[in-house]
Amino acid sequence: MAQSYARSVVAFLVVLSLVGGSLALTDPVRAQTQPDVDTTVLRIELHENTTATWELQIRTRLRTSDDKVDYRAFQRQFENDTDAYLGPFSDRINGTVDAASRTTGREMKATGFEASTSLQSVPRQWGVVTYRFRWTKFAAERDGRLVVGDVFESGLFIAENDSLEVVAPADYRVVSATPSAVERDDGTLTWNGPESFADGEPRVVFEPEPTEEASVETTTTPSDSAGGGSLAGPAGAVVLVALVAAGVWWKQSNETETDGDAAATSRLDEGDGGVERDDQSDGREPNTEVDKESPDSETSTVEAAPIVTDEDRVQNLLRAAGGRVRQKDVVTELDWSKSKVSRVLSRMEDDGTIQKLRLGRENVVELVEDASGDSEPGE
Image (tube, rainbow, N blue to C red):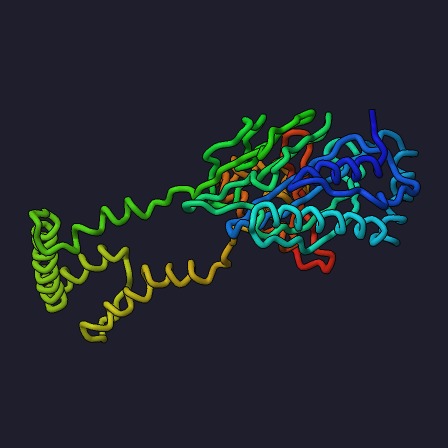
């Protein structure tokens, strides 16, 4: 059964009050004419510097045309007096972060408060209110790993139909999660309500993904060694001698052909793919002409081609799909790793190129076309 908008926000603040001790809930969010709430999603996206971006989505299902009309009226009210909603929210978040800072001993701060409302149709119609802020020093850093959980000193609770998501930083992977998450997708851990977490939970440990540097070093190190029984040195010398000998032979052969008769010239023409020579020029100019007509010109053509960035590839995929696609389909279609997709999409969301939506258990990416018309749909 749907709950009131004000109740939903207050319920979220009650959850936050469990962080680092109790927090008094005075002056509740103004309960004007507000829509009912069907579900909420709390998303905590961790960054490498231990800061986390918190996003609370309050979602209302718009089943009829009257629901949509009522929600648009609420949107106008929200946009005309956003401070009436964002002010109380930021006050309570600041109190919560201060309490967590005292508990953990880390100097924390809440910044960058935002509030917005939107309509979504993927595939059903929803009215969505989104609160967002950044929590510095949210995670602890231990032995190169990022650990989430100590701020939840008194546990956490999420209600039925609600969900909690914790997202790994770009190029990080999950080491452990307590309790076990219902779903792991693109570095995202999801818990669905109702769920009552124990003290200090949820607790998640992230570590950097392994790189390929070790294998590269193993390959290149022997060639730098002067001894130690390695075959790389002698083998390299043999190859070098062979290349020098081949170069001398080629040079001699080339000089012989240059001084030869017309038959030799004909054979060289055939080897160059039928490149026409000037009979009145000396022996150097034909080689120069061949160089101009062959690989170098192809290289110039390639270098002159437009550079397609990762962001361009994502935008082209979105346009081909009608402006909206599931995040896991981006992984499949572009043949990228999940961490790369997450990193590229995060950059694009920060730039305002796309927005990421959460529908049930799936992440959906939606293209935000530039109103100035800079985007070219035909790319």
